[in-house]
Image (cartoon, rainbow, N blue to C red; front, side):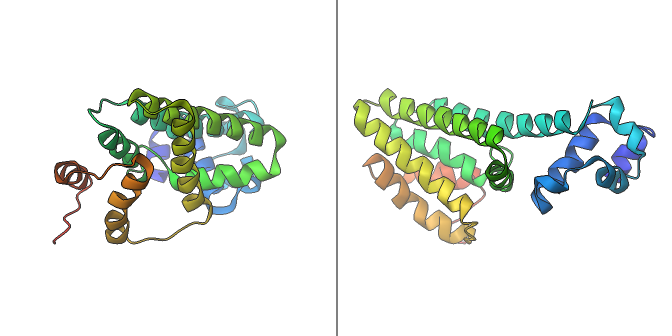
Length: 210
């Protein structure tokens, strides 16, 4: 990061300040996202911050927007991705839990911890939860589940994953992969076919018999 920022000049860059804020949030929580410590970390002057942000609140707003645009937008997008069966659709959603470029679980945990300290942030997080659950419910409706069943299955799927994140569950990839077919069966009521498993394992670089 330091090399990238130094190449942009003495002011740094907006993305560089945001990256530093992101790292501080994950490492030490929202109280550590402050201008002077970030400037020290980036080896930049405090005044250079104001070329990109009006104040700390604007930086925090940009940080929250990054979370929303990554985790919520991608989860909704994955729930809407093309699938021929509900099992295939479920694997599309499960991509989020295994691919940090789609869904950043550490970021999710940090923002939910931030929400405990802020009434405004918790309202935004609750709205994100609503949008995500609604998207998952719509996915189930798309494959013929009735309204109530779709709602319950969507909530079960989502709340279990948020529980994983909130509890900071540390699970070996091999163990998680073994469990995933059973989760899919519980959430959908259907047993995944081997071809579905093969495609899913392949795109995550997992070889069951390796």
